[in-house]
Length: 244
Image (cartoon, rainbow, N blue to C red; front, side, top):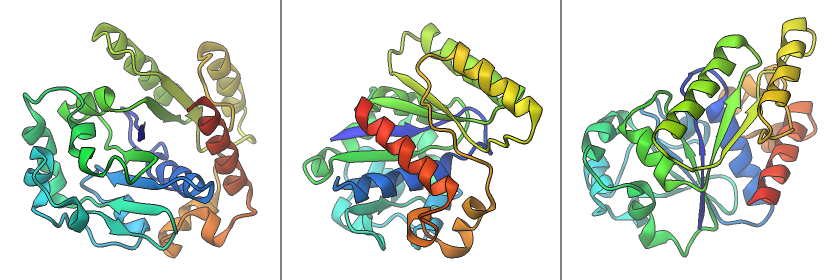
């Protein structure tokens, strides 16, 4: 079982949309995929038509490894794609993870590790106890970056933090919400590619169809598979799969 995290220090960069669309593409490729919604806002849970509730004992038992995962994990409308939902109580995870050994999130999933080929974490923004557990649990961090100065600055801050803490988890940044009509986006895209040799080359465009995921409560492949954004996510997944 491999684990990837969609993570950024900054909010509003397309983490949830990317997590869902990559998970959908991975499931279509034949992998058995679990997407874990770690954000108390539970957007991933909503997009995949589930209720924001953690069954099987709640978030405390989940963190302690005592939850009944068979009750906690839910089906989605897509074959090979399951969901471990979030709820408002997910905000307690930082406190519950305090002082616990590294890789706790991977250990929580150990009872179902033979059931899935890939786990994708949709993470809330910020540098917290939860994010530290994410860093130590996953095989790579996928970091969506908007081609703006502030968004690119947080990527630098993240790399500096990882280096300072001697965390060797690979960082695979990629561009989202790209508007090629904007000159600043064009210039920053060039700068991004030069500065970050580990970047993923597929750029996710700024597109209203991505916002429509909320109305359809579905990944792009289910209602707009031929759009530029859907193709971009498919290309992004193929690149990620190649690295894995």
